Length: 122
Image (cartoon, rainbow, N blue to C red):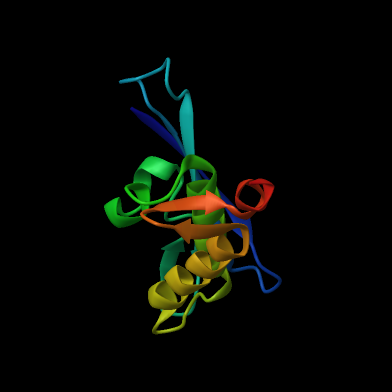
């Protein structure tokens, strides 16, 4: 495994973000490399995208939502997580925002989440 760091500097010259490229030799066919972006938020460095893939989502989300809804959840969570950096309830709020984003496109019909367009077509 190899790693390469690169810093992004803020207006005052202090590092505000670091990109870390990790070459994953264990599974080159699946993923050539992984870029982690860390942002400085007052109290320390934090990961920009906690959920890089749908498989990284909590089991409760993966087991209930279809793939497209998981994409929506992941993207909304990651965006909210970055937007609320430094806030004490950041993770809880990010999950709430992600569920709200899913509910704009999906509705629960019985035990399953169904896209609103598919539901109105019937």
